[in-house]
Image (cartoon, rainbow, N blue to C red):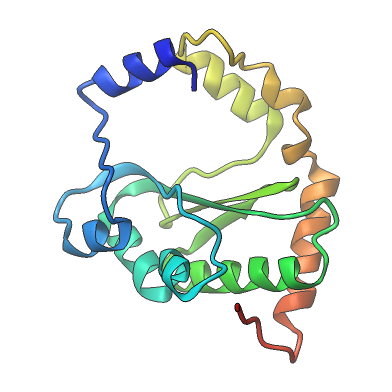
Length: 178
């Protein structure tokens, strides 16, 4: 986010930014939010993995309004091979225990969008462009037309990601970290 855009976002009274321990914040939180974005490190250690646990995702689900959306992400690869596919499948499975609606993007970074039954989560390029234009957000970098061409929303690439996640979910090999 550009500095000018960040200042506008941070000063908006509708925005609450909390730079603290995410799991502790969500587990003790009593507020409801429309969006919770988890900017967590990769789940490659026991310490970092706490941002991808059943308990953390359940706390995020409780912190959302009925139409709210939770967002988290991990580094991936275009073809989602081996351990990356297992990691994505583990996160997908764990998220699905707390969120009835779940979508994942494609690309070098997978974004997971999760919400309750009333959440309006879409990865449809045209719909996202239209919603973004309707929101009339003014930034120096982003334009709503981006959604129409971004690779992360390519339906064929998303189908490949979902297929690789399903293959890994059905695997007999457990996912582990060092």
